[in-house]
Image 1 (cartoon, rainbow, N blue to C red):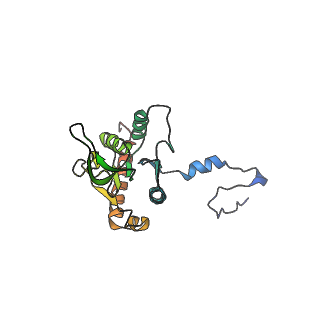
Image 2: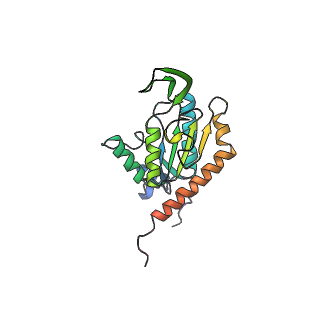
Image 3: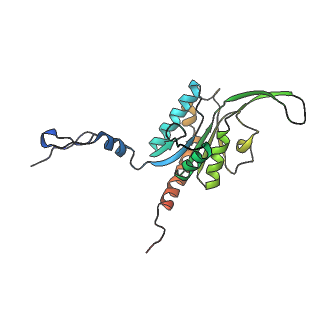
Amino acid sequence: MQMEENTTNGPYINTDEGVYTSAKLQQAMDQAFRIPVFLSTVNTLNQLQQQFLERLILEIEQALLFPRTIPRSDLYPETPLTSIRRMVLSSYGLVAVNFQRFFVQGLKTNVGAFEPQTPFWEGTPFSQIEPSMGYQYGLPLLLIRETGTDVARGIWQLGNAPFLILDWNSETQSVDAFFNSVSWREFFANWIGHVRNGYYLQTEPQFKY
């Protein structure tokens, strides 16, 4: 008997002949060949930041990588540091987006009075912790910063980290303009190459006969 050609992207179903498929299995198949990567970002976003994040996730998925983030996609019944470590150990790359979160107008140190300064933005503590743990494990890192965030703080301060940081100026650069830029395409392609290379190296057998 000749079987009809399946011209759709969906699974072949023929209820007359008792051929069925599982929607759950199809959902799993749609994720096939997608290498898991750690997406480090904040949970509280404004509308423009949300648009940027959604576009970033689309770019990652189109490269056949699977973005995972805490606590949205992965949540472990453990302390935050332990959860981050599990995420790092089960991923093959890390992309971190340091969005503007806290607007600081002045500082008071332990040796002086309060001194108003030029206002600046800070990200969340986890924007420092997660990329640092990923670097310690050796994951390929792709760092993106909303311009003006943590410019003199932690791993995002110039010279502290042994990698370049992409800046997105949310006031002058649209989301499309950033992701269509040469710098983004170059950084992203380079990062993808390192992620895939690391994946193939780590999934090779320990012993070769």
